[in-house]
Amino acid sequence: MNKISIMRRLAPFILSICLLAGLSSAVVYDGIDFRDGASAFADEVVSYNPTSEAMGHDNPSMALGIPDYTNNTNFVSLGDEGILVLKFTDNSLTTSGNNYDDLRIFEIGNKFESVDVYISKDGINWIYVGNTTNSTSGIDIDAYKGSGGVVLGAQYSYVKLVDRLPHESDTPTEGADIDAVGATSSKPPAPEGIDEGALEAISSMLPTIITFLILALVIAGVIGLVILFKRRKA
Ligand SMILES: [Ca+2]
Ligand SMILES: [Ca+2]
Ligand SMILES: [Ca+2]
Image 1: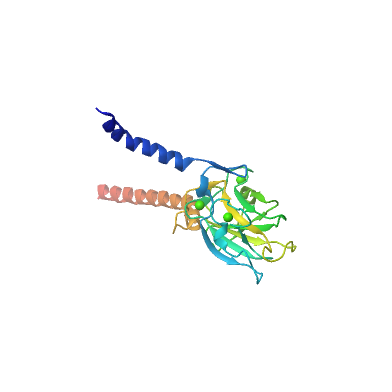
Image 2 (image 1 turned 30 degrees about the vertical axis):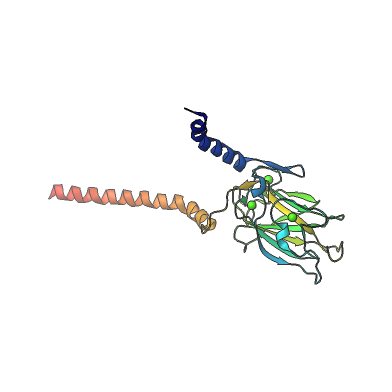
């Protein structure tokens, strides 16, 4: 077997190994480890509502993907109390099961400007998960578990950032200046069209359904025995 045919036979294996290595490679940004690499970051702009009229940095797609702020570009300013909604499409945000930070908001500028952070499965029903406290702020979403709150292991596709007062800086960088939003606790994309609420409701009803089925089987058995007994007697 010559060298060329050996290489041809090995090529699929080498390619698979390279692909697997690429898919699972963790990447460090600003000292923060993202186990899903670049895919851990927000992928799509859902809405952008800056409240300042004269924005110089008003392209919301600058908040997508990996942190890439450089030379006063590649970020979006929210304006005082402005709102930005982003979506994860090739991944989703989830809980870590502990108090480690699950979501990172990269904010740039000389003055740190805080945002309130909300997450959602559907982009309609939102859960408040605290506010940022520094320029690479981490949010532990497990801290917001509970009734009407975060569900352990659930997949959240949407993140909403709302600029907080006080007024810290003027146009063109009024309000929080967002470079990137990434999930350090990242999962595959949330399945579309599956209502997790309905699944939870069904699973909570499961014991009642099983009890009812067992009862129905017992009654059917008793009726069958009575019929059999009467036939033998006749
Ligand atoms: Ca992503
Ligand atoms: Ca956590
Ligand atoms: Ca950016």
